[in-house]
Image (tube, rainbow, N blue to C red; front, side, top):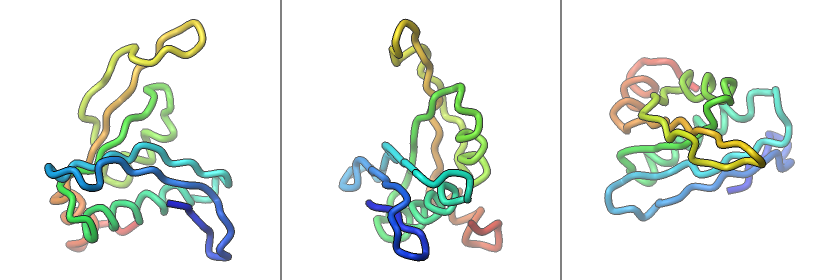
Length: 121
């Protein structure tokens, strides 16, 4: 999916994986925002959650993030994602290994937090 701002200018893209998964598990495989620092990422993820849980009727939305990307981890936590685990040193970057944090949100958590009087994105 291409992300656009309110003026219909492209500001990034999203790749979802597993939208036909029979178990209702969808991965937010990639989100790229080119115009950083304006809240577009957080807003986009909120819209993705709405799409995944309301339109696709998924049970679980998950993603991975490098463990040193504290800014992204904070954003994901602020919109309901929880840490589900860690894949230690699973990615080789140049001459070192990096670890990934697995984060996810269940449909019932999304509904509870954002649809039944909770905080809105």
